[in-house]
Length: 218
Ligand code: C5P
Image (tube, rainbow, N blue to C red; front, side):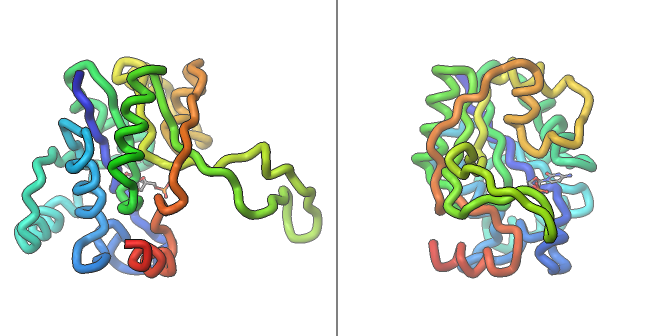
């Protein structure tokens, strides 16, 4: 059975405050995106599909030449939302198997976590990594808020792995604002989600400080 990786990196990365989206910024001498692709190449992925904003396709091809980056992957045009980008990537999934959807901005994902998610999804239909909340939680705003039990909540990561037919079926739904990841899309289609233990080092590079943390962790 095939093991696909759809790496979504078509976001603008506005919270980073840099001109270049964060997936292209350098981390220990290599663009973030190349670290991410390398992790999937080293693990069990048989096909890597990279989804990027069309305005950055030629820039990415130039970067690959500059860094002599030769990991085989298929480049696909991104969409307006993450949901659209995943949907476009899914069109390139042509064989039956398992699909891992991963945020380009999580370059520290380990080969072990990728493998665990693929194997669990092959057994149960899907596998979504999550870690417990470390901080206390409150709901509300500055003037009125209530505490929540942190034991009831998990922070969800990627790669989120799914049986390919199940994921394609889920992505036929209309977009909803609450679809911020693939688990929310698949759940809405009626499938129970299976959580597996994620890794606290699998951080999502969102703010400038995250790059410094990632550098230290590497
Ligand atoms: O916006 P958010 O932080 O949730 O983005 C998560 C991932 O989805 C990022 O890697 C981003 O590049 C990707 N994305 C995408 N297409 C979009 C928006 C986000 O591929 N239109």
